[in-house]
Image (cartoon, rainbow, N blue to C red; front, side, top):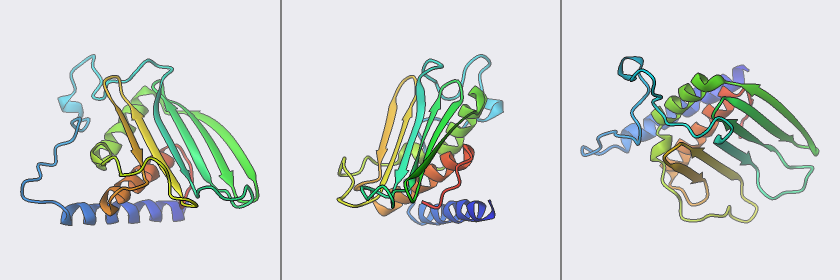
Length: 181
């Protein structure tokens, strides 16, 4: 657990440093949605418009690429709008495990606000839709009621890849997945 916390803190610090140095004087810091702040919330509306309760809002896939089953490691996390979480883990040696849980709708809103604050909605699309042969996979799809963000780690700039890695760590940490991927 301590390793996971240190990893997340290192990723957050690294992303902050890269983002801070990468800003220009024209950068407004604007994102697709404003951060969720209780004082700005309009009663009866959610800061991030969610699709129907049984629809997938967040789908995160991280693995070490097309390797033999004995060497395959990674995870796939699916979060529905109602907060239902499904996690599939694959560990070396061909073993895998599954689990479910719940964040609740407010937990989904909190997670989206955290991802927004980390710059997830500002990540570019990359230049390739497929991972390089033998390369790792990092895919993150966020589906809101009014738009879909599909982020593929293949072909991203180093700054955007750092943001994606941070966003993947946030999703994994929020759902209880311990990962050093």
